[in-house]
Length: 178
Ligand SMILES: CC(C)(COP(=O)(O)OP(=O)(O)OC[C@H]1O[C@@H](n2cnc3c(N)ncnc32)[C@H](O)[C@@H]1OP(=O)(O)O)[C@@H](O)C(=O)NCCC(=O)NCCS
Image (tube, rainbow, N blue to C red; front, side, top):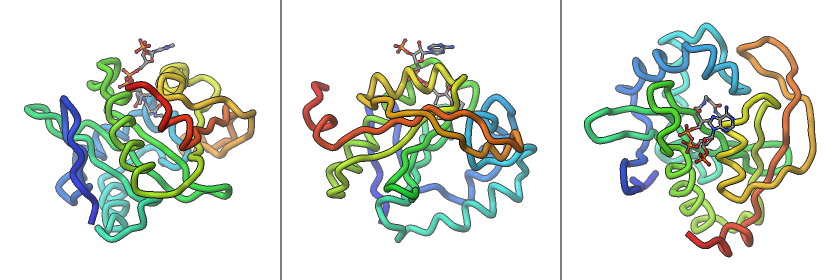
């Protein structure tokens, strides 16, 4: 079962079919989808429903996604983990109304705390497309370090895009001062 994680301003919970309309509305925004690797554009309600059908409650920790829900405002976005070629990958997005309020730094912190407490993974991988300064700022605040550059398919752009590769080790995470 995916736990509910509580942060000072919101809850992280299991994605539900009732999130589909919000997911479709917020991901059908090129400034969101175009910063993500695996999200098509335009993004339709059927895409959200198909993805939600894959979010069964018994997925391994490294394939868990959390819905970020704010009291009074509802669905805000997702933070989560999926399998990559080298190991677990960390990813996240927020609908545009929720940007620049410190929400992702807080949601990422709660989910990484859970991830490193629940697995023995020595490292988690992430990164940003080269133009995504806000996301890179979030990752630097969390302790991710840049490890190189690669080329990654961006479905929304229908093209390979230069990607800044990053990683965060369990030892760096556990040594950080909250
Ligand atoms: C990237 C994203 C998740 C950031 O979420 P957020 O809640 O706005 O992030 P936070 O408010 O916690 O932190 C954002 C940081 O980026 C900084 N920032 C914002 N815009 C910036 C820009 N254009 N250049 C440099 N830094 C920027 C902010 O100042 C803040 O840093 P600070 O706390 O040191 O001031 C959100 O913008 C988003 O969902 N974007 C679209 C999808 C996406 O890019 N997902 C990530 C893919 S790798």
